[in-house]
Length: 384
Image (cartoon, rainbow, N blue to C red; front, side):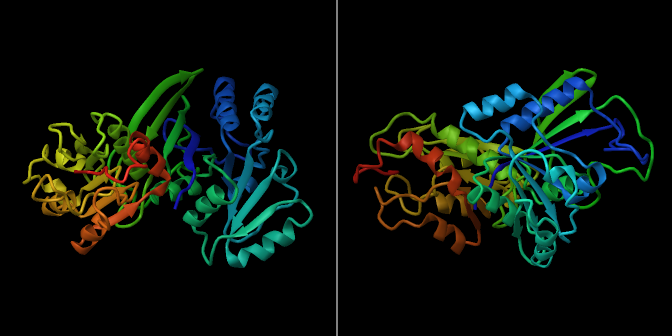
């Protein structure tokens, strides 16, 4: 199911701490970085923090710039982003500044914690949402996307929230402000806790000084597992859709892009329709660039903007069969193939019958369709 773009934002010391153990909050950022954070807040639909951060820091979580608030209103948006918190227990302090500043607020809690949270916040106009017997982050994100209309979510902590989202493959971006100081206290809170994280290196997309802070922006690259989609899955599928735009124009075949990605997040190969000859398919083109003996293929994911074909006239083997024969057992796609050339084709079914996990991310369907708009009204076009 679709969910917002999830941006994790944090400031840390050189030795990886969010704070020290003193009674007052350690200010890691300076004026220039506070202004940068305010700009990111103003661009977001919602800002999320954990209930522990409310208890520890008592933040207001506002857009402080009047100019930025005015720009939001001029664009038809609320003056302030939606403020969101999560609490498994529903144990919330109604006197916290979080509830009395800014615009709309919503709390996500467990079925058991919902009543407690509703009682604590009675009369404050806060929306309390039960997200299951245990706090399920996928339920939270889907509700934010589908019910609250959130497309861009900024997460400001604390460390436990950041850790859970990153470990579950739900973070699309990490913005890390590195402060030029050391904490050196073993009991101080760290940004990320111990435990298993998605495999592979993150990709650095930006680094720049902000005052005496260094801002580093990373995006995940490792695919999800099985039928679970990750932030990296969305990144690679978006790339496949971009590759589809490169296809030579055709009135009789779809434009499709494909990427083969190893389990560690490294790209193995990419391709697009008609890249090498007039009837080449995207998955075929990408797989042709791989070494059949490459051991990474067994754990790889194929990202294709269109469902891999189950039948075709121009080659002996359809793309679904080529993927299975290559040893790949996970495919992520955006769009089911229409009945414009082969009626009732079911490439995803062929893949599933062959033991592959198939993930469909319909939020990318429009991007996949974009280079094919001229074909969709025609009954005689297809992937030949």
